[in-house]
Length: 157
Image (cartoon, rainbow, N blue to C red; front, side):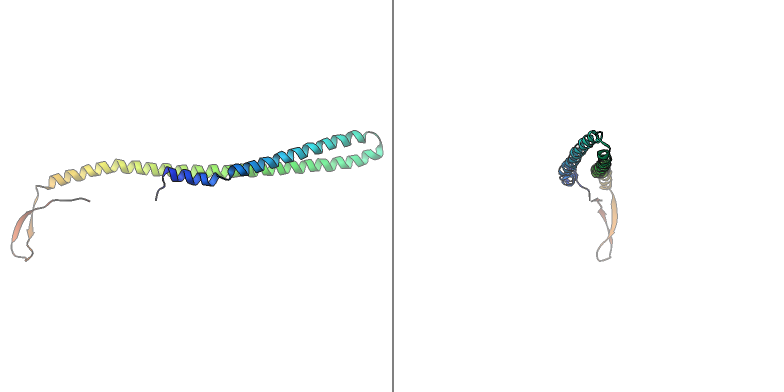
């Protein structure tokens, strides 16, 4: 059985009610990763400046810089993962809305078609009823004896 526009809208709004909170959470995570990346890059800059001073510190600093770059890459990968999840979450809701919209449009078209057919059908039945009022039919009486002439009226439901 078909749903009304209100029902479709209510169902969709129920399904997306948690979406803003999920989006906010994901964007907050990305923002936090950005801050951590920024701090790590600043640390890399500091280590790079210190490594220029002497060779022993340079080797230790290079290793720390490599680790910090790997950390930055991990942050970037995590941000990409969160962004992908966010995109998929929003895309899922858009696809559902598209499907529900197509169903609703089909139901509207079906209702529109039925409304167009009903008046034509009613007009057709009305003409048959008026034309049949003058018909006479021979009907056998209950006892089976004799026949009598009766008027027959067609009634359509």
